[in-house]
Image 1 (cartoon, rainbow, N blue to C red):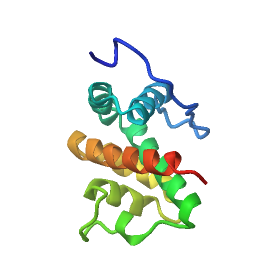
Image 2: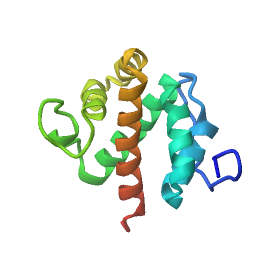
Image 3: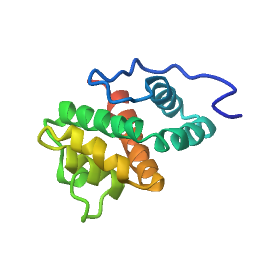
Image 4: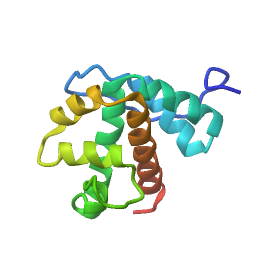
Length: 136
């Protein structure tokens, strides 16, 4: 079964800054991740990774969620040269976005390889599912 066979409840995802994200695609991916639907998640992850603004928005949303939950971004999410659970690509983008550098994060995602964007989005999904699944 692929993501085209069924839908997952998603999230209302937009981009108030008009950076060209595909909100429905990212919403569907997040729904598949929350539902733990591996076939859909794999299919949709590839599509998101192939669209740099949408991939950057996934990382941006994860950074916002972490910041709101713990009051900042810890080094294991921003330091590319340390061993951490989050992918190196995620940590690179997160570090680029620190101190209101979100536009730079989108620019950095645009020049990343599709493989690196996929790794960054995968880490973002792990963080979002973990944070949003945890009671307040």
